Length: 94
Image 1: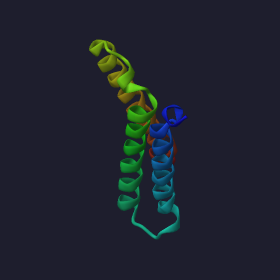
Image 2: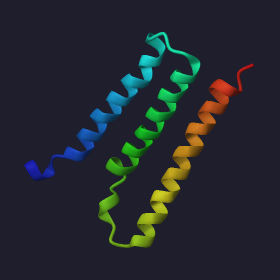
Image 3: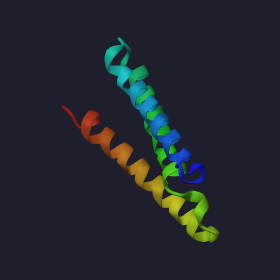
Image 4: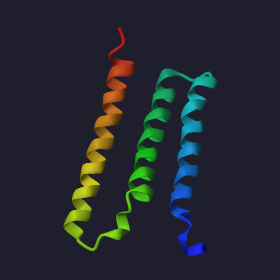
């Protein structure tokens, strides 16, 4: 039964929850705009990396070309999502 337990998935989920709490701390603590944005960007990138490495089954493929293509595509989607969210939620608000 120990072999079937998804230890990496549980660790990734817990780390994602910790990063979400850190990102939510921007709302509760009195921070400057620059410090808050820096924390949000760092936690967003770290959370995207956790999702990529722990939840996408990176080590399951033997084909290196497919592996690197999936990583590049996932990074592209993550960066576009983060920048699109910042664009619409913060920089687009007038």
